[in-house]
Length: 152
Image (cartoon, rainbow, N blue to C red; front, side):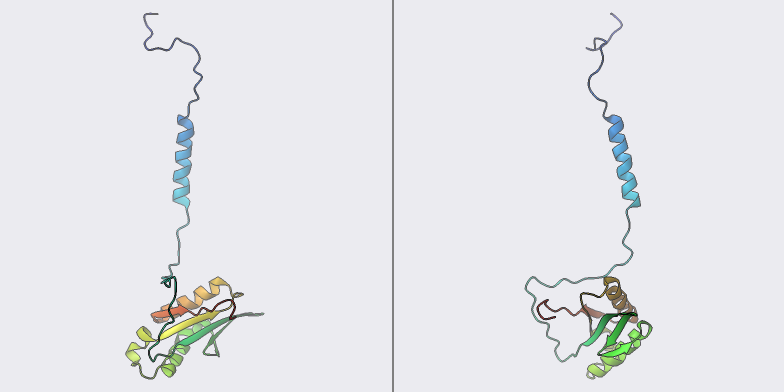
């Protein structure tokens, strides 16, 4: 008995060894962190205050871009004129110029207000496609036209 060190008397150990379990959990955590999906589309959203105040457009007339689901796909309207998604930027610019004759052409992309309007049956992806198309065209003030559920 002179060769033994410590208080263990040589009997079986009844405590479970949790070190391998913790190692496996850490490996799984690292795998989930590495394979987590990274968002590919960033949309800047300015949330309204809790009690929204109606927007004063101060002489600016907004251009309304409407989206409706049809049996054949998606229909896009710029101030009730039917347009294709590929022509959306040009047609929206034409309507923004017509709606806001007081604005200079140089300021049109920065100052013209564009509101996207869709009903509840419209797919979210279609709304995002239209908004990103308008932002790629150069329009800065693109917003969502919202109405209360009781109004629609």
